Image (cartoon, rainbow, N blue to C red; front, side):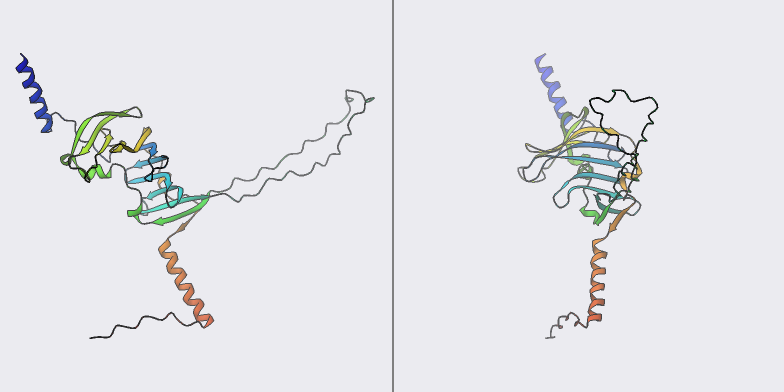
Length: 271
């Protein structure tokens, strides 16, 4: 009987090693969602809150970035471009309270009656005008699509089922999934695992003993299209176009002031 049990265990281990009976690899890119979690600081600082929205190829990330600080990055599908959004405080008019036109009633003396006569008219109440709502303003700086944050599932989708294996079940933020790891380590001494749901949402990424990303909440469902574009009222800035425009303006200014043109390097002599 003991030999039969050992044979069954060995057979199950062999089947699992061959991929038979193992969980199916996640289906990526078919689920729209909003996920919130904590991202580790690569320099060893405190983890920061990160919110990610996905809807098909569209993506929005609200996170702390080394260059921009607290910022929002969107991939605008209508322009096939990525932008860093930075809001600015609205410069709307300030509400002003006009002075009351009704004379101030003198304070009662000790001999004055405690109750005013019924025939005394009631002083009108001064109203405060409300300032009109200001339109949201800010700047949207164009960045190279390659510089925009990549979806968490991109690397695992590229890895594919043939190059990954499951190392057990997992649960993060009330969601169940499987822990996946590459069959070949990404670098010597580096062990990377990810807790991924069956519908391809990455709940946690761990590298050795460091948790790089861990979700705290997840909501599935279609996301508002306005989340992925540049808000109305924002100024679009294309750094490349701005640099070109500045160069053209400087050339025009030089022609007016009579400044000599920037000398071009002489061609190298031919041997």
